[in-house]
Length: 366
Image (cartoon, rainbow, N blue to C red; front, side, top):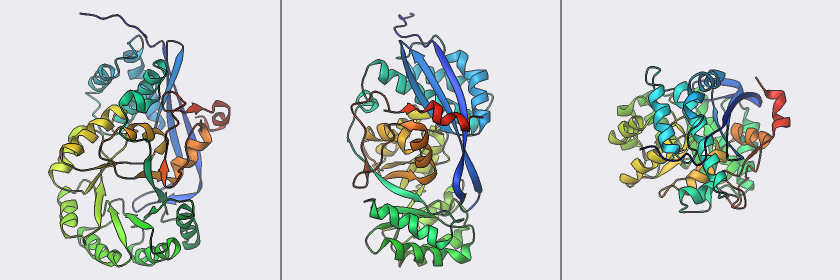
């Protein structure tokens, strides 16, 4: 039986912004010099919520042409119901990729809107279990010369972030030297993570794991392709004690995460609310990991993940990714900076606590 629509969603606005990097960036399998942010703004009851995804501009077109009509007029309180209808609408397009990133941007905006309508921080709406989220500094791109790599990683440690991650895999012959340089820069006590983005073969990954052990590497992300679940399981079983295997950032639906966990492929599952169908999908991934007594980590977009991660019972440090940190501080008022290695939500602000800097963003509009 239909219920009263207390807060009908009046409009949905979609825009996209492409921001050049401050230096060429590359990981083990790809290089880039710009990042595109797709922004969704949802209005109801005199409030405007925002959400976003880091995605191609085609994502904005899909939202505009297919998803807006599903959202307009719906009750802003019914986020899970709207989410289910959005997922149904893209059945013939497929879940992975642009479709899930489009749903992500809309879903994130709807959660922000609902919290603003209730005049509470998003963590209060979701139900907080913590009010600080530990982070690891992430960057150290393979395109960086050694001096830039060392300066960036050491800078995070000097700021009080006791764990940092660097990229490897573009030129495997250089990787051991680069990891040694990173360890020298951050000192003996900071934790060192490495991320191959699936660039290695299984045998390469096993060999590097043994070499990295002596340099105190405690987190080896995507040593082989995240599609190679048997390979990840192999590396996880044979990696040195104290070295965790992480993957999951390319997960777009719950079944992807379930397969990865059932294969016992990772020690730490990563999920990304700008890819996995939004905060709704992210929290469902968290439930999967909790059911296996494992912890979840968030991939990139730290400003967007801060409040949801405060509601995740079992959490590992999340990614404070250089490229996204820079963009979020450029385009959003309210983006937080770490204090003693952790982000703290601003509980004086409703929703995610972010306000879009429209004038500052205009020059990047596409």
